[in-house]
Length: 393
Image (cartoon, rainbow, N blue to C red; front, side, top):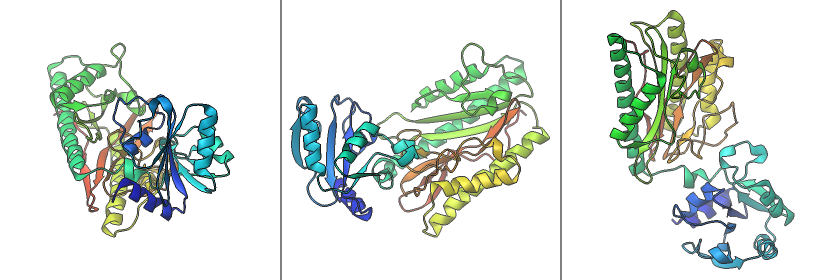
């Protein structure tokens, strides 16, 4: 079945009249993904691709970039002035009542809210209701092949090895009495990335003590903290193989630069680990029963464990995010905090499970691995599991 046929099937299920894909200056990368527009293609003018629920698509392109959608079927219409653009659009959507676009009511899911308000206003001015493409879009942007899935598994194995090597490196420095900073550990990890042929869109997080209570702490060359005996350490890294279509892996581990952790560190660790397991088991059970599981439900499963332990206000981010060729993808997120994600987890997708507790000015614990749901519904943990706090022997 072609992409157009698939899209029309989803549109009919949604009782939508059609899907209007729109882009200006790559503002809608999801449209680029669906339309498989090669990276580097010049798209400096607005284009629209209309996929009706039934019938033949229509391409609306600017005269100076008239070939941008030539790879796709349908009638080509060309505009040059703003008047001709609006006139052609009005004809295309005439009589249509429900039009899907990359729009999210109240910006509830920002990851799919790519069409600007003015363009939404324009389509509405023609008498149409704009609905969200969020319910079916991930089938085209977040689902990947089993071959791509193997790249995710390999990336997870590499990260698991790199984090173990980094901890061994930290331990050996401490045993020999050498000084070491967060930044130096970060650079060591980046060197290991290069040696493992991994790419990351930004450097890993290496945080010590109170910095671990900041989920997005970034160590800098100047001013990063030293790692000393007895310190609490968090390592968060993400990366993918350096070939087109590869999928990110994303993991976080914690350790204490001592022979054993404190009672408080052990308490928080076990709560976070229990939350991670609860979220994972929900996903496994639903897929084994061939039932849907929504992103918000996974978040609730982890969050309820932490709330029942009395630390709910210190779990300040979602339980997990969709992962694909981007580390934060367009599919369902494990989220009922930052947004209420009602989208189901799809076979052929991946996401992180990373609950955390962050005690300001004290320390934080986040445990993260990835879940890969194979196209056959098999649920696999990627990146390794942490069942105990890393220590210095």
